[in-house]
Structure formats: C-alpha cells, structure tokens
Length: 261
Ligand code: ADP
Ligand code: MG
Image (cartoon, rainbow, N blue to C red):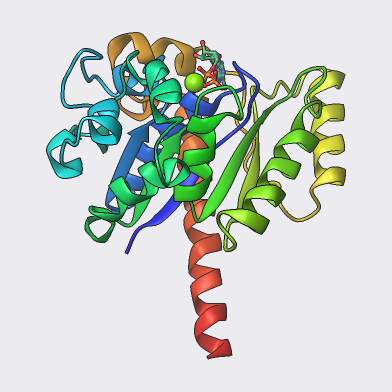
C-alpha cells in the first residue's frame, strides 16, 4: 500500500515541483512504484514529466467529473502521473458546496493506492482547499525550503495548518521531512539559512541538500527529470541521494514499527 507524501509550501518558487519530479524519478530508479499526482493548476509537474498539459481525463476530471482515477493515469519512463490542468483552478469554487469536499482527492487516490509504493502530490502555492485536499490525502508532508532570505517566513503558518488538519481532518498526518533547496555553499546566506532551518526543525532536515544547479532548471523544458537530461549533474546526484535518504528513513520506520509490535 502506497505511502502518500504531499509536497507543500505555500510560497511559490521554492522547489516543490522540481522536488516532486526529480524525487519521483529518483525513487523509481530505486525500484519503487511511483505515482505523481499533479495538484497545481499550473501543471508544471505534468509538463516536467513530458506529459501534455491539455490531456484528459486529468486530476480535475477525477475530482469533479466522475472520471475513474486509473483512467487518468499516464505512464512515463520516469513515473506514472495523474496530470493537472488549469481547469483545476475552478475546482476550488466548484467543490465549496460539496459534501466531504476536503476528502475528494483522498477518495480518488485510495482507488489506486495498492498499485504503488509512493504517491507524491505536488501542491499549489497556497493553503486553500486544494492543499487541504492534499493534506487530507497524505500520510506525511515534505516541505522544500529555499535557502533565501525569509525562508522561514510562512513556515509557522504551514505548521499550524498541519496541526489544525491533524486535530480535525487527518489525525495521522506527520512531517516526512524538510529539504533545503537551491543551496549555494559559496554564500553566507545559504549557510546561515540552512543552520536556522535546522535549529527550527531539529532532526527533521534531510542531510541531503539540493544545490542550485542550472541543469535542474533546464530539464523541464525538455519534459524530463534531471536524471534523464543530465544524469551526472550535481542536481541529479542530489535528488538520487535524497531518494535514498527518504527510503532509508521509511525502512527504518518500518523496522521500528515491527520491533514494537
Ligand atoms: P515551486 O514548485 O515551489 O513553485 P519550482 O520547483 O517550480 O518551485 O522552482 C522554481 C524555479 O526555480 C523553477 O524555474 C525551477 O526550475 C528553479 N529551480 C528549482 N530548484 C532549483 C535548483 N536546485 N537549482 C536551480 N534552479 C532551481
Ligand atoms: Mg510548483
């Protein structure tokens, strides 16, 4: 049964989509069965995996037009993907009057969960109903934090949203981890931000840090993850290391659980 990880930060441009695409491809290289659910109307994860943004059925059709989840899944060499589309913007308003509106995505993904090891959800840059749906569907939350000024700004809002969701809608949700992105070891700023984030999230920041790497920003225009575009780049190596770390944490968690039974 898949573990579902939502990639969340209400700030735009912090590396959510880059992390989603490249972590998915790197996990697949480690023999994991991966489904990516693009849940941002901008659909950059969809195009970043080489899938046409206008394809149907897409995640909007699954949420609101009664399309079967399995029929919306597109296989790519890098991961399976449920594509998004700008129609998803309208879903926020259209869902308002519906029963169980926070659980629409959870219900949709539950139908295909047994086919995968991990489902990664790429979230839009906000904390409204779409992200709430992702938080209800998720077992854990992975937070990319850009090594920039104001990196920590907004993280307390994000954490309090997760706490509210835990209290009211999804009691078992937990933090998967925090990943530092666009790190530049030559600047004091990156080093300082990294230290500050680690102080705020003791034990929850991945040892793997994603460097600022131009290959990561070029790969999406070829519809490929960086591992296919430039496998020897620093960006590719970093996401491979992050995938290994994510797996290691989860295997450790499983072993710990088994021991406590
Ligand atoms: P988000 O999904 O949080 O809005 P993106 O993943 O789309 O953020 O990243 C924002 C921009 O920064 C994109 O143009 C992306 O290509 C670029 N980018 C992301 N991570 C890196 C990185 N590690 N090095 C260089 N460019 C990056
Ligand atoms: Mg994005």
